[in-house]
Amino acid sequence: MVGGSTVTEMWTRMGSTVGSFMFLWAIVGQYCPYELRRYIEKYSHRIMGFFYPYIQISIHEYGGDRLKRSEAYVAVEAYLSANSSKSAKRLKAEMGKNSSNLVLSMEEYEKVTDEYNGVKVWWVASKVMSPTRGMSYYPIPEQEKRYYMVTFHKKHREIITGEYLEHVVKEGKEMRVRNRQRKLYTNSPGYKWPSYKQTMWSHIVFEHPATFETMALEAEMKKEIMEDLVTFSQSKDFYARIGKAWKRGYLLYGPPGTGKSTMIAAMANLLNYDVYDLELTAVKDNTELRKLLIETTSKSIIVIEDIDCSLDLTGQRKKGMELELELDMKEKMKEAAKEDGSSSSKVTLSGLLNFIDGLWSACGGERLIVFTTNYVHKLDPALIRRGRMDKHIHLSYCTFEGFKLLANNYLNLDSHPLFATVQQLMQHTNITPADVAENLMPKSPLDNADKCLASLIQALEEAKEEAAPALKTNNAAAAAAEQEEAISNNNDS
Image (tube, rainbow, N blue to C red; front, side, top):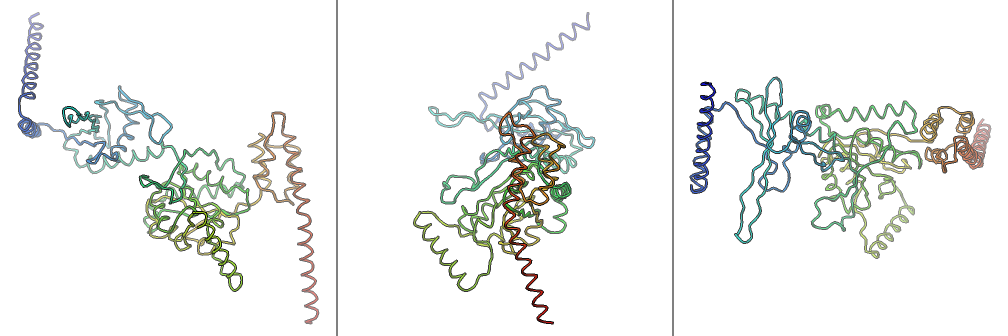
């Protein structure tokens, strides 16, 4: 009983002491000059530093200009989101800026514990309110200044400042990349950009569903391309060691409808990259082209589709009357553009080559540059040589193996009696994967597998009949050439 009374008296005295201290501090805060209060706080922190064995590091959301969030703060926020969702008791859920999912983070003044190589640290999410400023009639409201504070024992200073914080930022950036919402970018004509626009690219959410598993390609070719892409994405240290910019060029060529655009979407989905669809005809000149390159981010694919049709980049060395006719046609096109009030692009082959592998191409890193064309022979050899377009991928007509994959995708068929007929016709007929897919796609709820396959067989037979006259002509020409060669040989003998 006596012991209980003693404890009660002790708590009473402690409460009274704390209350008195808080009262005195309130009096000091109200009547003590601001400069004196700052002086007291300054030296009280120094005195506490002699006895307090812990170090605190704060990472603020904004710097002095308050124009852009600190990259370190955003990385820490992403890193702690995984840890805090498991251990914190008070969380807040927000829709990420570049994510379609809810992102969990610590509520203000919540504390979580983290451990690195046996060293324990404590993270706290805090905020301070800046004082009201301005005239009494028009005061500026208080602004929140958020920050994260990490606390650790002073004996671990080197490992925390040298390794742990770097680890947190690196892991946080990787988490943001994994959870980000991928985008499809395009550039607008330079003369349409308003002066206040912050970027030359506009974008939408990239939601193309194409994957390598659904593409009508041979298994070996598919495996080779996927391994090449994955190896590139994991080769940062290798590219740094050999002194080469971390980028790789892909040239996709073949007839229309063979899946070049689908291949690009599959690449983006495999590597989780953004896509920048560059329209060369909307670029004013080489300088503007470099500016567009600078504004692209890493982990992206820069695409120029149908490059043989974009600009005069074919590199054909014409002579005589052919060159004069071409120059005359260009002059007429320029005059027509001026009359329409539009500006023609002045991007040159040299500017494009520098864009691909010049000094500016090393800005950012981890990029794929993809060209597509239907007529690869029209392109200048300097544009598609190895080192610029490192890997050339020929997407040709549909094979029977590709047909079976499409049949499985569209009709859920692994085998069918009509497969033999399709295989026989495809051995002598060229048909694109796009045409095969169109015929296999059901057009109404009543369309079944038999009807779709019959439609494909009919299309193959029609294509075979259309190709027959050309084949006869080619055979006749080849026979005539052989006969002429034989006659010439007899005359020589």
